[in-house]
Length: 131
View (spheres, helix red, strand yellow):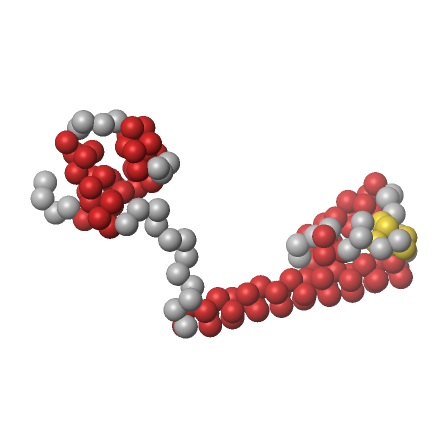
């Protein structure tokens, strides 16, 4: 194994893995050095490395959340753009309601997946208050 943070996602997960390795009497090789989880020094080193790896992962998550919050505040975090414009979606639903084309045909005509057709129809029916 090249890096400990590739082994486990959290300190608890790393501890479970070490317990399993100890039970099987397996030694762990990290970055070319051998660590024996039954040896007190090896166990200490492994726990320290696991804590540092978890700390790094937490920092990455915090920075990502912070960056997304800044982007959202600036209006740059909009998510995936819709495949169809509002006018196309309205036309698609009207053609669907006319019953002249199947969903597969509509998907081919508009160049989108069937799931896009289903979502557009569902959105229009959810917004429709006449029953």
